[in-house]
Image (cartoon, rainbow, N blue to C red; front, side, top):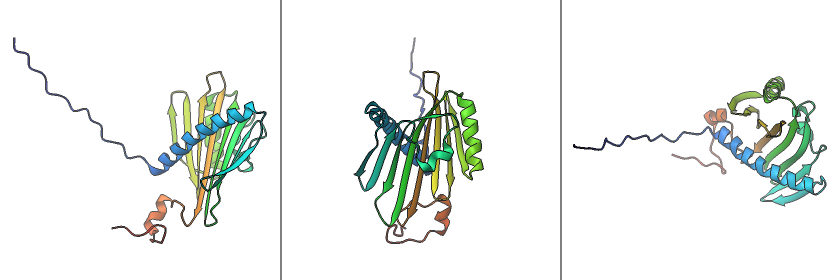
Length: 195
């Protein structure tokens, strides 16, 4: 009997080209997970506020039900309980970079919470760019002017729904331009021309 091996099948997948905005939001969500860990640490300390400077950013972390930043009050799901937040603001006078993260918990179903966020964000003028459902998790991402928002809603494993809101704004000379601005882009000292 002659046994010859079948030719190896090439099952290579081409690397996906990630949408830069989605990649930025995904990075911020990863940062928000770190914030959640810090928030849990803070809550163990009795719900205190901690502020510090790091890497040119002023950071403020809060825990407990009074931790909702003013900018995110309109994005707080009705009846949800806040467990913690983090706000970061650039200390650079030429660039305004701000990020805010808020962790909430609700007893409502994921689908109900996701529906409320999608409608609430649209009503507030946000352009919903993505809504993804992966198992027991829904992520809604949107933009408005110089700001981006991402809301991740998931089952926390204990019968409650976890809500993570991430909002960021970037304005100024070193800010990342919107994709639509690329058409009218003019090189400057911060972003020189390329060939």
